[in-house]
Amino acid sequence: GTSRRRGPPRTCGGTDTLGTMAPGGSQAAWPRWADGSLLQSFAGAGELEGDGAAPSPSPSPKARRAARLGTHQRRRCRMETCFDRSRCEQHGFKVFVYPREAGVPVSDAYLNILASIEESGYRTADAGAACLFVLGIDTLDRDRLSARYVPGVGEKLRASALWNGGRNHLIFTLYSGTWPDYAEELGFDSGQAMLARASARAETFRPGFDVSLPLFPAEHPRKGGEPGCLRQRALPPRKKYLLVFKGKRYLTGIGSGTRNALRRLHDGKDVVSLTSCRHGRGWQRRKDARCDRDHADYEKFDYQELLRNSTFCLIPRGRRLAPLSPPQAACVPVVLSDGWELPFSEVLDWGKAAVVASERLLLQVPRPSPPPPPQQTQLLWDAYFSSVDKIVRTTLEVSAPPPPRRPPGTARGAQRLPAQIIRDRLSPHRSRPSDRFFPYAEIRTDAVLSLDEHAGLSTSEVDFAFAAWRSFPERIVGFPARRHFWDAERQRWGCSAERSNELSIVLPAAAFYHRYYHSLFVRSVPAGPRGLLGGGACEDVLLNLLVAAATKLPPVKVARRREPEQPGDQPVGRGEGGRGAPPCRRARVPLPAAGLLQHLPGAGVLVCKGRGAGGCREPP
Image (cartoon, one colour):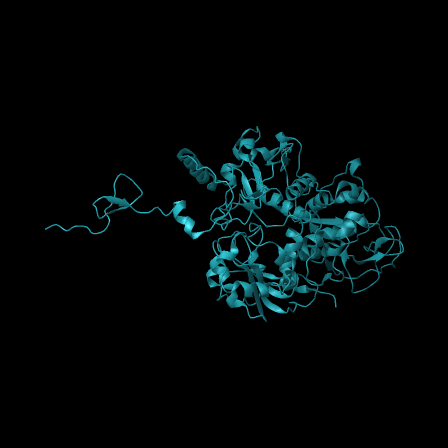
């Protein structure tokens, strides 16, 4: 009268196998599909990418529990819980780089990162005064199968007196994990350290604590870098293709589902989607009937030419997040990679420079209206990605702890009055003309009004210029405007004071600008070249260079009630010329500063004759 359960009985005691009754009455165990002996029939020798590598020993249960506990604690780390702000209060944000160990190999890419830190204004040689610590051990490539993998990092860190469980440390990583799942493993316990890593996954990324890096190649230049490829003035520039992609077609593993469907987009006219099966070891055993035909099309097109001649560039799911080629080529990225944290997402609004959608909508992505302008990609490339130095400086600025919160009205820089006039005498060692751009602690307001002794401005003109600056706080807003030029005969830069619609700089003789540019002036121009700015108009031109390089925007000229007569282009002293219009002086710009002149707009000064942004116009 009782019913019997059919099928395999359940086992007790916490075992992980199920049993069936054999014909003889004995219980036979089900096969364990994780056994390597059962998987050998599915893969030949040398076919897998990991073949030939020595198998890593299985960790003990105690080690697995410790790893799980450490992972849980690391995911909960934030600035408030895993960063000691007290180290930054006395000396400010200073970075200490561990000394390199003799005999330990270091890649060129990591050497460039360390050199950029040492040349920045954040570096300190005193570990006791440091707010942030950077390892001297190369941690960029944490793929165990890579020849650049550095073993034994965890043991070296635990032996260091500065490690302190990773607190106040920043670790740079470009490649983490290994085949086949490419999990985010570093091969050592990072503790409470902040991670600056490329191809960061959103599920493990700690906002406000970690930094998402761009994946840059080993040959990426340390300084300077190639400019963006956008040369046309048309908005938007006309391109031959609408959408392009050229990359690997994974036959198995991560991203294989999305990349195998890319061939459906290819029509050879508006959309060019090229894939190749040739990657990894043993790809020939897994190739399908389309591999040979796809590879023939793959070799017909040059990747860089495709990028430069396409409006959109597809970035599908892969084992790493795509490198920086699309932004440099002024190609708007179409990111179809769920779960990736885009580079510098903490400070960059990628929605204005890229199309981000789910990879499940590969064949249904609507064309944005209007699409992001390619000029946005050029701005990101020039300001953040074109060199290792820019990547490192952005990383350090993002990693710096925010200032402590203060009650409303007591924060430094709060404006209680329309203006603050501080009468102060500069010390004798700061008597050069360029020293007026030094970030003095007495300057507490955001707006800085720069005047010389001949700037005869009325109170209404100052009020009008300040109102214009509030509409354009990132630009230089002033009255005297000039046009810079290169004097080939005298081998120096000069500026012309002749009346013309072609204006490129606004002189700080009577101008408003943000106090941030004082700090930028000191950090971006080395002390040696700054010492050469003792005379001439060099400091005026250089300030315009820095602002143009930082914003990619022209300055703003404010029209006066009556423009004074301006002298001709001749080297005269300050004090000659009309009311409030300092004459233009010739100056030899130091070589490090002259490299910034490519950012100075040729004829793009904004002219304001009425209050607010509506009263401003581009010159005809």
